[in-house]
Amino acid sequence: MSRPHTEFLQAQWLPWQSDTLLPHLSGVAHRVLSHDDKTGAMSALLRFPPGWVANELPPCTLHEEIYTLDGALGVNEVFFAADFYGFLPAGFPRHRATAPQGAVALAFYTPAAKPSDGYDHARWVPRTDVFSAIWPAAEPHHGLDLAAHQARARVLWSDPNSGAQTIIVGYPPVWQAATIETQTVDAEYYVLAGECTVSGRGTMTPGAYIWRPKGAPRVPMAARTGTVFLIRSHGGPLAFTATGEGTVKPADDPACIIPPDTAARLSGGPYAKEAA
Image (cartoon, rainbow, N blue to C red; front, side, top):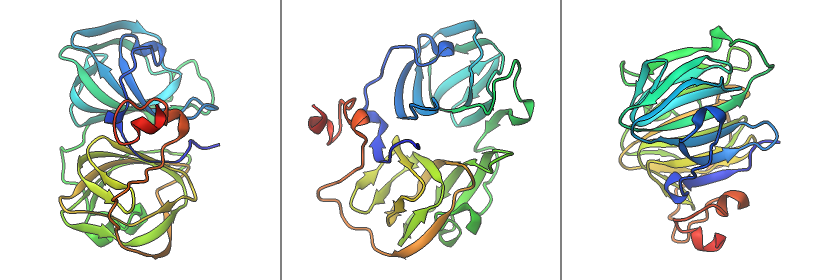
């Protein structure tokens, strides 16, 4: 079973949790954005305190993707500053990890196909400076009407087996996706910059998160100032089937989709009272 539909959740609505999320993250606070109880896959924000140091960490049994949002995180003396990305395969050796000034990072965890004593070097993506080069113009196969809106997209990682991808996408100012589409793969979205109004749900700002399962509709969206998304597809490249046209309706009474277990953890935002 896929993770439950979430559309949308501002990460700021969730409190930081201090319990240890995974063995290699001792002393690191977290906000879990979505979680698969059966497989252990999850997406989370991590907050490393200033001066955090860990030596000879146990290998993570899950594939780990890291996108640093603030500060800098070092793994084996390789530092991921803000807007740096890396893919560390399950079993990747971690001799030392540090966050001298502290750091906040977006992290994604995916189960390995089979346990291994080492790690799959072919899956490893070393430190990538996301803004080190001009992103190419998006093409139709990226989905989301990207090409039609002069968006730019950079693929950060592709699964060699399934074709699943992690991409970063930038929409220019004053864009609108009026089509209503059905998503043909599971996918998740995190707003890194700008804003985006989702018809009937409200306006997402940096920190907004969506988990949209296969078969769920994508309603019309628009933004005046442009938007930068980090998008991860699961099971294949991002793809949609158009089912109609619409307009972005104002959200006088926003109706976000938030799973009950997530709603129970809310400490802020318009839905916190409903969960109390």
